[in-house]
Length: 279
Ligand code: ARG
Image (cartoon, rainbow, N blue to C red):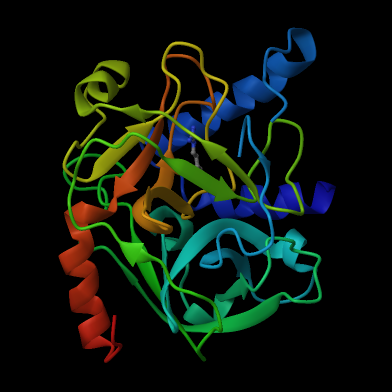
């Protein structure tokens, strides 16, 4: 547990910039508040353990090297083609060499024997990451050294207002970094409400917000970054966003902010094309 925290903070140190820095500061403050007056919900925050196969495309992004998958996982990601993972730019911005990164796929349980570790052979960070505001266009693509045998998720191509959204990952539940990924349903928050919550920090074009504005209690959190926020489409799910930032986690008035996939799906397709990968 200790060790994981150290690794995670190390990874996060590369990700502090503008809103991200405040997001981390907010979380540190939360952690302290917890001992005094703990109104931090049990539990992603407010969620429950995912079932095996619930999100086949959900992967953990980790550091290459020694340690268990749980110890090395520091962000989430989504498989969008058998050799490509979509994650957050802030998860990989400190990476100098793709060989530093691995992807864990195949199970929601990071201690399962079914977990497959795959090396990353190349990565691409959005050219307009942090433009026009900090954390804008927070997306990156990882090219895997070999295909993973999981169902990819389709990307949303239309920015819209959603009824049902759900997010999942191995991030902080408020109590721990879980071994089994958690998932939670989060209400959609309009651009106007999100801009009001975070004046001057929201790029409505490339960001989408979700959370229970009035009550808090449900959210993604540190360690979930890069992972999916999804909406059902028939009996499938579509990837609408990428866990990006927030002030603290699950606080009333402070929604979670996500990269809005429909804003950059064409840029993503262009990178896949460049890599010679079929979407
Ligand atoms: N930046 C965080 C990470 O690196 C994700 C924070 C999400 N925060 C939120 N309140 N939804 O894992």
